[in-house]
Image 1 (cartoon, one colour):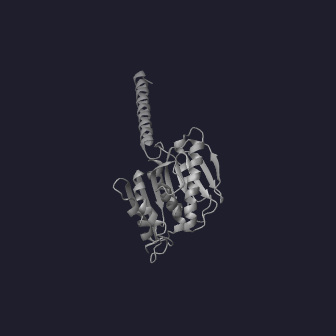
Image 2 (spheres, rainbow, N blue to C red; image 1 turned 45 degrees about the horizontal axis):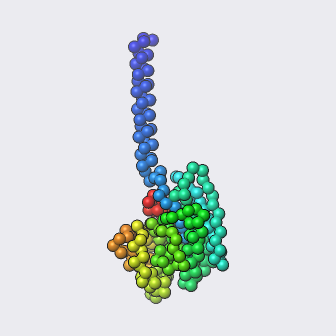
Length: 269
């Protein structure tokens, strides 16, 4: 075989390797700049609503950890307001990558218990702040969990030691679940203290709609009442509706679209 031909093959092979290497480097750089690999800026703390279980956020956690490893901290607030913390560490991850789930043993659906849970949330965050040196976080509240977070940010708890940066609410019944007879017992104190919400950087308020004006439990009007609380000229407020024929209040946390919203608005912010 002529030497010129052999050297030609070597040159072509070298050129192809350079092109492939450059392509891989470019793709890796793109991946690092995409939402999948963006470094999380602060932990995400999740609170569910009434009659909740410890597994309510499992679908969202599974979706988030499928693309990036996250330490998970499970916090239980007992019926007598004691705080228990269990953490699952992941090698080479930082505090900001942490997903924190706060579970209330007593999540009875009543206004009085939501007030009690708000104080329980304050105690849980005080404990987390001490143990994990937590200073700021993003927050996700599902159903009445959104009311608990709103009360906490509005300084209606015993103490507020952790600054919440971004807040997402899913199916939160700000004015109860009866569209004909709105419940303002918890809503009016939030309106009175709505100036406290100016401390938030952004709020995303998500409602489910079966096309009948509710998610089979919470009316759209009850969810959208949150706009009067958070549209204050300083906080970035986004209100959206997930329209699906078969959606229900109980399945909001299992919707893939909701998991994407959590990633985009809370994990990558």
